[in-house]
Image (cartoon, rainbow, N blue to C red):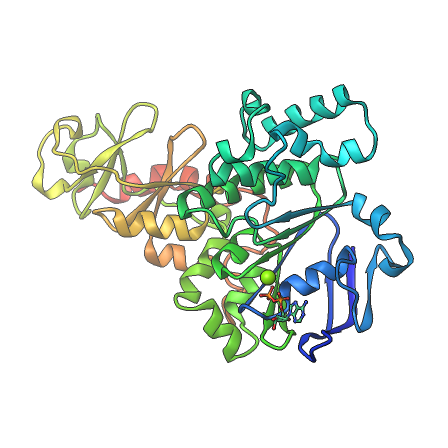
Length: 394
Ligand SMILES: Nc1ncnc2c1ncn2[C@@H]1O[C@H](COP(=O)(O)OP(=O)(O)O)[C@@H](O)[C@H]1O
Ligand SMILES: [Mg+2]
């Protein structure tokens, strides 16, 4: 764990870059420093590897003051990634990645083999190993920067706006791969960004810095969205806080209904009384929506409206499910299992009844927060199958 204890940094010109910051960055998790430009994020990050020495207070790694460690030795255990990757232009990709192994006097063969392994890890084709940084796109260079920081397998990674200079599509890819990589590596990561959406997507914990180096809030992203500490944080988070909170609400606790799901072999009359029915094939894969009142005979021959977006029950968030419901002609979200088979449907009201982490009065509703994975996503639909079909009909 990385601990900030009352850390203040005043630069010689009098600028207070950090003002009495206390904070913990848990081991194996991603802590994001986010905030306005000049808020002290980079300064805070650099106190960890002693590129900046605090004026007051201490930074501890696993309880030990970093000031008691020699900077060179300290930095060997701390990967560092910056914007524009900061690669050596005159060195090949493999030699850039192997920078720290060379410093550690690994033999060249082992260092390059490690570099090639890491290239694959970060999604780069090892055939690029002999190229120079200028021959790579911005996104590829950024991957090299991450690989280089990982080369000596440091337990801690400091990342300062690593994805800020690439275009939004590549950026989203880098973020997704970064999360996949972290799920394997479990590094202790401190990640700086000025982008609140990036912070919410990547952070296990998000620390919000305000101009003047003040830490205003540290929370899990869903709690930050639900309970911003003050107007500054609320303003910084921006609009649609409530909807964005639904990204953290799980569909595992959702009760999916089966009463609008019909086999293609069923007759339209069986679905009479419903505005919309979902037609599925023999494997329960969705075929489309039908208005039973407009049809006679088997649903297999009915005019179907496209299913539209579906959501993975228990895997996708309530936000994804709600999006599917809004896009569905029936106003119902179709929940599917990992094989794409329909588990059941849910309307907007069902989706909004799922407990969210933050908003007052909602957290205690519905299933307990510790309900087993997938509870409710499959069973109620199974249980409801027979009676609900009987209930519809004529
Ligand atoms: N070496 C320095 N000397 C004087 N002021 C600095 C120095 N480095 C940063 N600052 C100032 O400290 C404040 C915090 O900077 P920084 O930590 O880079 O913010 P952020 O990364 O949040 O944008 C800013 O006002 C910046 O101008
Ligand atoms: Mg900065």
